[in-house]
Image (cartoon, rainbow, N blue to C red; front, side, top):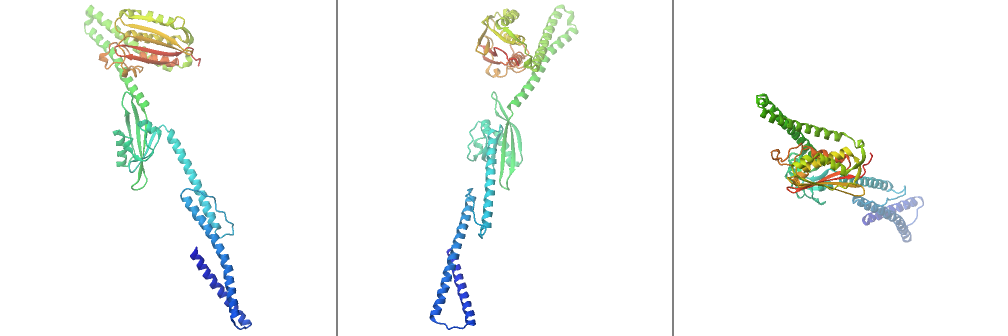
Length: 465
């Protein structure tokens, strides 16, 4: 500004000198006069006076204009650092008015864009936070730039928000291979990965998206979808088909085999005929029991809870009746059965469903018990629920099997050839469905070679709908 002011001052002085000389030439031409030192001095004083006055005006205008330019420069610097000072307001007559309006409009646009970007970022972070899918963003340097809580939960790792190498969070080879394959091939990848093996199985579908930013810069978005439930359902379906096929094939094969043997001539031996017919009858009954259990299970699942036939039921009476039906099996194993259910316990429930629950649980407690063992039936209650416990001293159930005994056709044995007791593997699945229909829960506590306790918790009064 100082140099510019010196230039302006020299121009103003030259301008005033030339103007004064022109005026004097004109006056000299129109009315000649004699030059004298007083006249020259007066002319110099006049020129100096004009220069001072005009220079002061120009200097003031220049200073004000420079202040405005300085404000604009400061404003632009602040805008570049995401700061937004007030608008610069100038009168329309100001030479810098149009420039100030342009700067103000630029600031307004940048402010709106910044607010929109901040809002979008907040929305993105909110979506990422509550998204049930694990998301991780990895840059071209294999640094984690972004991840959400779902990813931390799936990986069971606390992921640092500061950029870091992704292998600090992902040590599983299957996942690192997917990421490295994406980097190498620059193509999206997808695979099913088991994060946690049995018994706490956790399976995810891992997908990567390759995003090319520039020639040497890219990003990879890793997404993990938890498909454990779907995987377990598919596994259960496979097991169901396999087990159902086996359970159906065993009695049918036996019936067909013994029938063929009889037709081949064994029927002529009365003793063999009688023995084979008993075997065929037993296998036929086993097949009938299996079909009835499958139909019963399907019927229970198809029924709606609104179809419950509710009424007052004496639990002691139900237990006594079921024990009477099973008396022959109890005597065969010389079991000691203790019915500790109070005769005064009356609940509002569906009698037929409760009968079937107690019958199946008592059948298992007797069937899987040891010779001269014990079966104890007890109950307890709170203000709104009652609990039935059936405890036996039988072969027990391993901790691994306890997680699956309520699945259809599942048998708590390492192989069918080692099964101690025959059965369809549907009894506890039926009990589970019946308990669910009655708005209750069932749990098991067991130890191998010690015994098992089945605990059923049901409402004292079933809801009417």
